[in-house]
Length: 169
Image 1 (cartoon, rainbow, N blue to C red):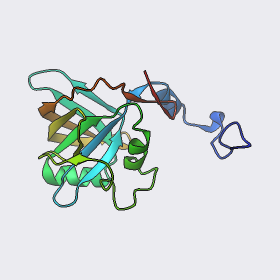
Image 2: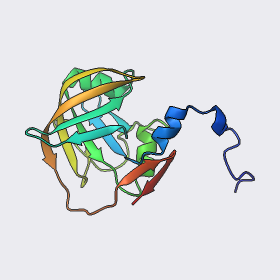
Image 3: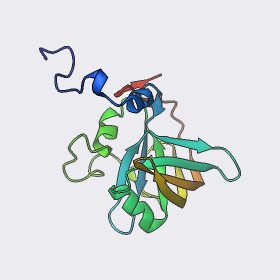
Image 4: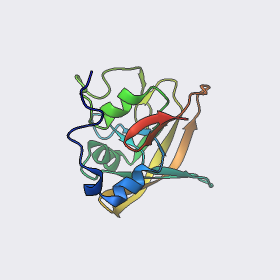
């Protein structure tokens, strides 16, 4: 129970970045990017991404250049992209670093090891080979070629991020 209708610690609207407020109004699919790296696996929740059809297909996404995920991708040259589904809010929060992960990010759930990185068992995913990366605003634009696609039979609704909250279609 809360005595406040909104977050009392939130930055007032008139003091928020107009660019961030604009971006927040663009619903985005929530994905999980993982990589086996050179040692321990790493992962990160990524919503700023797109898939481009072609022969071969391509992926582009914005990640933090200081993240463990980027270190792992840079070391291995590959990663997996997993679209998350309705109800995966806690999984997304955990990999975004907004929720505790006692024992590590991959300590809970049923994970399948792949050459691209661990993926949650039963989820659709794409295996990607790193083509390059460059600074892009305050992020790193990661570009990759899709080398493998594994589609599950589930017809789950996608998890979306809109105006700072998770939602679905």
